[in-house]
Image 1 (cartoon, rainbow, N blue to C red):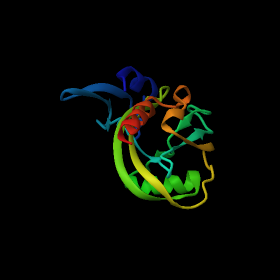
Image 2 (image 1 turned 180 degrees about the horizontal axis):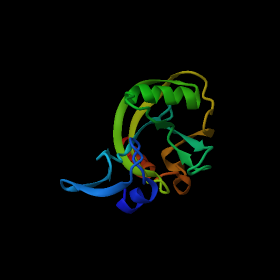
Image 3 (image 1 turned 135 degrees about the vertical axis):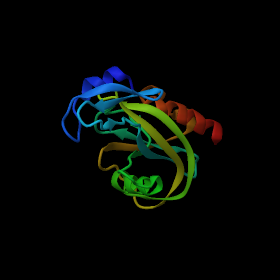
Image 4 (image 1 turned 45 degrees about the vertical axis):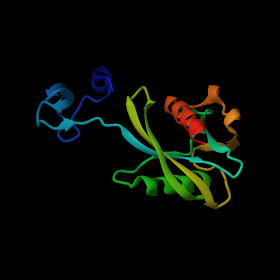
Length: 175
């Protein structure tokens, strides 16, 4: 995140409401409260998502029903809760978004991105390979559609986030 964006959106200390100033801490800069010295660490927000693959070696993508990137394709998943284990968060997201339980969950990779440019929300996207164990695939929560794609059918021009391009290219090499 750029320091200019951090100062633009985060101006007051969440502890004492004092003014946040950019201050050097070792080799890096952090927003620091002028009154109580609280350091406001702006870290990447972790997500857990799945590349769900069926017996035809097709991958499941979901169409976003909410901003940012409403109407664009994404991998099913979402933000982890504070302190939540990534696999537990993945299972929770699949139940909330698609009504399914997963099997054969395997770590695939981690990809960095920006979720919301306006508020400078950087993401640490943890992606897993998985299969559906049980449940009827039904878009819910913040998804308007779920669709299976072969490697040659991936809607590259309608993908929601830059991290997904690289992850899907890696998946194509992996399969």
